[in-house]
Amino acid sequence: MDHHAISQILATWTGAPRETEAEYFQVWQRAAVEMQNALRVWIPEIYFAPLERFENRGDAYSMIVYAASRPCYGKPRTEFTYFVPDPETLNLALRSIGSRTRRVLAPIEKRLRESGRADLALRYLPVWHEDIVRAARKKPGMLIDLLAADARLVNAVIDLGAAGNIARFQRAATLALRSVAGLDIRGLAIRALELAGRVVAPEGAVRG
Image 1 (cartoon, helix red, strand yellow):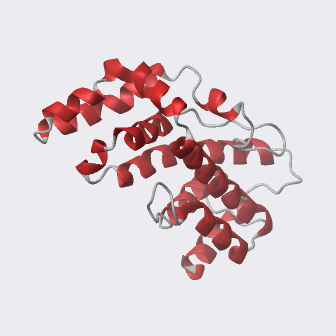
Image 2 (cartoon, rainbow, N blue to C red; image 1 turned 180 degrees about the vertical axis):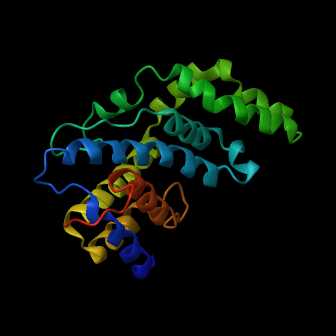
């Protein structure tokens, strides 16, 4: 993870609200939700780049349900992400996600069918969304790990904005992303920082 690149991004956040300012939670909450939604796109895209990953339906279903899961909207003024050890977290993340799951499944089914994998495509029809969510809930280990990884990264980005400690961010982001569903996706850390910056300091304004 490039220290110089992180430093350059951080330098543009000088216009972001400080922890003591009234708009701090509102602005960083918006950034947290944007990052969670983005990670629910980025991570599955990387994971499913090889079509073969759809053959392991257990893991694939967990990834699909993660992609469809609801982001955490936080609790003022200190919590921006899910507290994954809380037994209620899974219920909150998966509450009423039927339509979201169908939207995730539709392009998957189409991709498999157009790639000549019609038999496999049948396993990913949007009509099976309830069964797929049920299967992910039954064996939630991978799904919980995914929610934990994105919570760690989002919290690390927010901590960087508050403390400016690049080394601490690098350690936290590495812990979050070095092994996610068997993948090293530390490259997403920079993308998350760039996305957060567009929310918290859209003009890179320097304080007077």
